[in-house]
Image 1 (cartoon, rainbow over the protein chains, first blue to last red):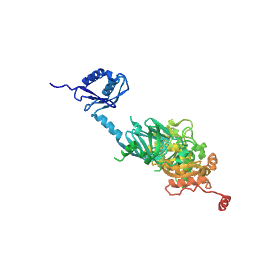
Image 2: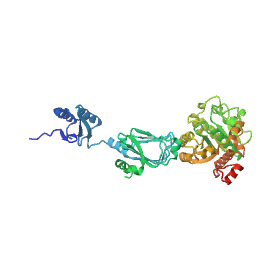
Image 3: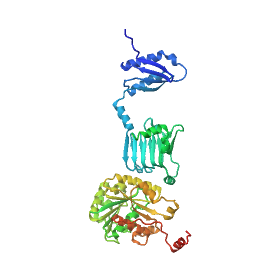
Image 4: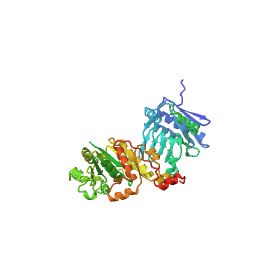
Length: 232
Length: 265
């Protein structure tokens, strides 16, 4: 007599709940069993603190809509919150998208007033960005030249870790993720200050953009990771 | 076959028309056949600066719309045999001419003249596109002010997109030495750092430029003025000579030199 393996296994951990799902059954059955299992165990999370939930679907591809559906089912229970849905499978499109985000676009030109350069991925610009010019990237921005215009990095979903590095950092405006900072110096003064090899990053503790000397910035753990990507 | 040079700036009032008139004059002084073309339709000034306003019979729009032949519209300068001008119309606006028509006219002029100097209107719209359509080379005029440098930068960006135009060259106009010295004006090096194009010349601010414009006599005709010397240098550089930049920090006057000797400065 064979033992029927449950399609959804619930595991309690210190940091929350893990739902391990069967890889081979039909998705429909999975959804059904998930609803049943969650309803059966309602008393476990009727009250008390909010429990974070990790969903592991293993070697099963789940589309964005399916992700949403799973999320909705779990969120129907008040105290449950989905932390992440892990899958070992990615579609080719997603991979292409990811590769796009990770590549470095190299370019050698001057971005003059009124010109806009915007790329998917990281931007390595050899040349200046003049006042009135704008560069933007979904990832990081590295400028071998003077940044006098506007730079906006980290336009992708999780852009908070993006950095903007310039040989000469005299921007009119910087934007990392959704945070904007502007230069308060007067225009004449700004051209005379000496700002060599500086790096701008988002300090999440204060929620502001910080400009630092590059080597000082390098000492911060998460930034050195970002910057090391350049060397790979 | 001559070459066509457009004089442009983006911003108004930096001295495009004065520069066009003077470059035309100095090239004519060197014996070149020069035609000045005013493309500022509706706001023409070049004829006034050249003192040729009362000789205009036909204009650029008449040529474009086929009301006259090109050489009928050309106005001969009263001082130089080899200098002519194609005036703009005053009664209509920039949309009266298309860039393609403009290019055709300039190409026709290039066959007869060594240099065709095109005076561009302010702005980046139709008038600018008309002026640039037929040009082989470009001269960007700026003054040492931030707003003017910004606009020059914008214009250089637009000129770089025009494939038939060689990389533009820069003239820094209206340099006031006392402001440079007190640090209230952008320095030439700073301007060059931002714009990063070749410098064709620098022209100091000279009150006589205004009075000579009012008289319809380009300042380049007066050999004693420093602005005139600057324009003559620019003319020689256009002809391919290597001329050093003018020394700005020159203090004239006997007393100044005496004071300097005695260490009173």
